[in-house]
Length: 62
Image 1 (cartoon, helix red, strand yellow):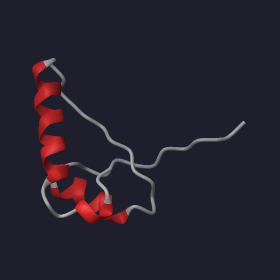
Image 2: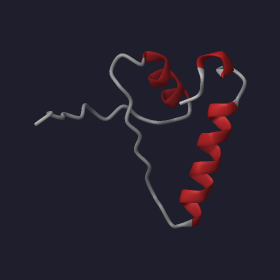
Image 3: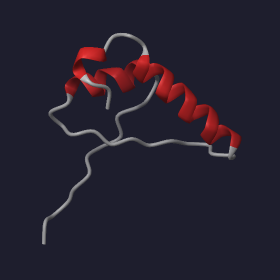
Image 4: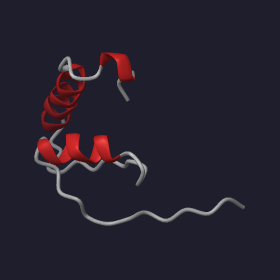
């Protein structure tokens, strides 16, 4: 997560690009990220980077 006051400066894009390059180098063929349903800004960011929305994750506190 990039601090709100730093957003829009390309930091998140650089982080994702670096991680994708690293993962490809290890032979990864697919990446998945999670984001809280309320973080619509993050959803737009990832969708803008070519990530597909694939569903919801469920969790339960025990």
